[in-house]
Amino acid sequence: MRAANFLFIWESRILFLGAGLKAESHSHYNASFLVSTGEPFEIETENGRLKGLRCVLIAPNVYHELLAEKSQMIVLQLDPLSAEYLALATALGPEPIIVVDDPGPGFARALGVLRDEPSCDKAAGFVKSLLSDLADYRSTRTVDPRIQRLVALLKERISDRTSEQVSVLSLAPQVNLSPDRLMHLFKEEMGLPIRRYLLWLRLSRAVVLLQKDGMSLTEAAHAAGFADSAHLSRTFKEMFGIKPSFFFSDDRFIQVHQCEVW
Image 1 (cartoon, rainbow, N blue to C red):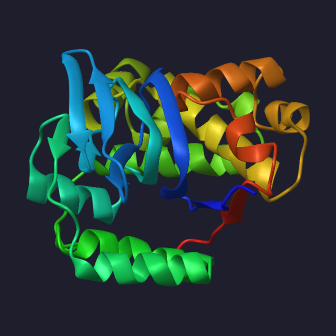
Image 2 (spheres, rainbow, N blue to C red):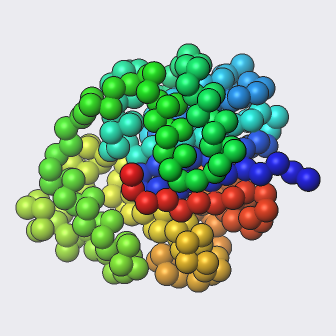
């Protein structure tokens, strides 16, 4: 019998605990904080392969392949606008991939508690313990308030299941920018084009619908604005390097928890 793996999903972070990960070359909006509690893992990048890794921070929108089939992995994905990532980036520097020292002793205790009692509250405590030795959450980075407003509008539209009706051009006047200036400023501030970010929001919405609302892959795809389930699956693999069935087809293998904002 396989040991249970765990996936916790919040609005601005994703935490996965498990083994047997192999993610093909991909990039995504979230930053990734990777820790092995067993065998070291490897990362293939555009500049070559990094071997013997135990703790790594990967910046947003960086293409990489994760080779961790024999490793017990902790994968923490963070929204680049979250306090946790902004603090990490401030503390660790701007490089696309940063090898980090192993977390402190409190991390192992928090991990044991989480595995014994998997819950959103315990997962939140674990994340704070994992990052507390590396960064001060009071560190912040200023994002243009017009882009912050646009992000809030986009999230609101996606959460209302009207993603197919989202028009960037129609939103530009609401943030007092021309469409051309909006697209340029968004990429400058967020590191990716608006349409790529919209695709990420649709994918995040589909994950919620799959897990929390119990929809089928086809139902979630249509509700989140994808053409069909194949389009959703392709997008998921493009952004995570893994098919969605790895996480959502067998809940006896991976326990999925949809968590509220803490």
